[in-house]
Amino acid sequence: MKITSVNFIKSAREPSQYPKSLLPEVAFAGRSNVGKSSLINVLVNRKRLAKTSTTPGRTRLVNFFVINDLLCFVDLPGYGYARVPISVKMDWGPMVERYFRERENLRLVILILDVRRDPSENDLSLIEWFRFYRICFLVVLTKIDKLSKNQIKIRQQRIKEILGLSLDSNIALFSAKTGEGKGTVWKEIEKMTSTQK
Ligand code: GDP
Image (cartoon, rainbow, N blue to C red; front, side, top):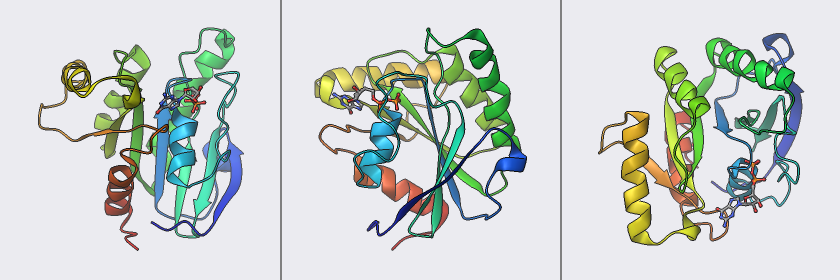
């Protein structure tokens, strides 16, 4: 998609604060420091739209951005960062689950995992919610520039097993450093939001 405009709309903690407009929505989830901001920034060709974090775990709210006045990107709070206070950690589950449960225009969640790491408990909770609330999701393995093709294949297999995904299920490979996989991720977004342009 050719990006003509990207506008930050607002940050929200709960549904009453979500934007009223119901454009097709795509949400991005992942543990702190996984590369979520970098992925969003590459997708929309912006250097610093989503904050690339020097202090991981800082973005603790649900952030809404409108792309081309056509669809909405939602940057969900990261999770799993050790130095975050316990109160903030406890906030994450209910805040995110509520978003999944109540946001009727949500079309797709992109779950970002570091290709080198096994999925965490929180990653698995997300997958459970997607299944429970019947939300379409795409798993994106990022930082693939750090491994060889062969290592990526092995990791991909292992991550599928841990997540309980069938071996032929769709997992995208991505690198914010090289831009590899950007087209694949966009294709999936356009398919799920019917916004091919
Ligand atoms: P977030 O906390 O999930 O938003 O993670 P960031 O986007 O801030 O990225 C965390 C760190 O990983 C930063 O130092 C990024 O430069 C780095 N990073 C993110 N994506 C990639 C990638 O695809 N390849 C490499 N080599 N580094 C990446």
